[in-house]
Length: 398
Image 1 (cartoon, helix red, strand yellow):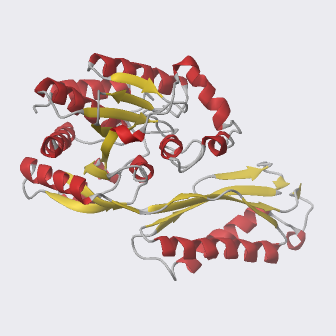
Image 2 (cartoon, rainbow, N blue to C red):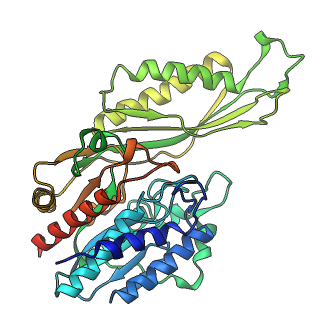
Image 3 (tube, rainbow, N blue to C red):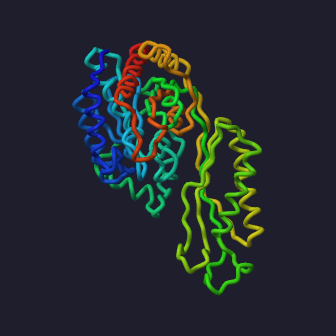
C-alpha cells in the first residue's frame, strides 16, 4: 500500500478552511455549528469519491463504509470553541487517505468515521458515547451546552442527512490516529507514540448559592458570597487531592459562571466545572468522594446551598494487544528506534468504541505540547510519518 502524502496534506488543509479562525491555523468548528456541518458534507463527498458509502447516523456521526467486514479508522472533526486544526481532523483525514490507498492497492477493507461532538459541547465524547451505548440517546437529548441549548435541539441542524445507526458488528476493530496534545514526543524528538492505554475521566458541575446583595452596604462578616466559596473550595481541593493522587493525575476547574456577574453586587451564585483524570478507576472514585466532601464542607462553613450536576465520565481503557502490536511494528518500520509506547492523558472516542470492538491509538508530536488552542501545530513531515506508520500497521493486519 502506497499512501499519497500530497493528497493527504491537501485534504487536511482543505478541512481547516471550514471554520478557519483567521488566527494562525486555528479553527472554530463546534459540534452542529454551520462550519461543522459544512465540513461533514465535504467529508461525505470525499468519502464517496474514495469509493466509500457515506452514512450519517441519528446524532451526526459520519461513516464512510466499504462493502463487507472492515477495519474502522477515524476520529472526529468538530473542534473546541477556540480549537486547533489537527485535533481529531488528523485522524479523520489520515483514515480517508489510508482507505483510498488500500482500495487502490486492492485491500485490505477500510471504513472511515468522523464522530460528532467529541469535544464535549454537550457531554463527554457524546457522538461516540451514543453509538457505543455508553449514553442512551434519550439521556443525551437531555444534555445542554453552556448556553442552555439541548443536544436534541442542536442535532436537528443535521436535517434530512441522518439515517440509521451503523451496526458495529461490521467492523473488526478501530484505530484512531491523533496528535499527542502533550509535550512528550516533541520534547524527546521521537516521531510516533503507540498508546498503551487511555486514562479515565470524571466531570461534573457544582453550584454554590449564597445571597446576592449590595457590594457597598453589606458588611464583609455578613456576606454569603458565592465567589468566596469557590475560592475557598479551589484552595482546599488542591490540598486534599494531593493525598491520593500520582504525578500523572490531573484535575481542573475550567468553566465558571458567576451570577449576576456585576461589579457592584455580591455574587449570589456560582456554577463551575470540576474535572479529574487518572488511569486507575479506584483512584477516580476516591477523588470523587474528596470532591463532594470538600464542597459540602465549604458550603456548611460559608452558609451556601449546594447542588451537584450529573456525573459524566468514562473508565480507563487498555489498548488491544493485537492492534497495538501492528502499530508498534509499523512504527519500527517507518521510524526505527525513534518512537515509544505511552499512555494517553487526553480522552478520545476510542474509549467509547472499546465497548464494541478492539481499539488502538497512534500519536504524532504536538509542537510545544500545545493543543485546544489556535497555536496547535505539528510539522508536516511528522504528520506524513504518522500516516505512513498507520498505513504500515493496517497492511500488516491485512
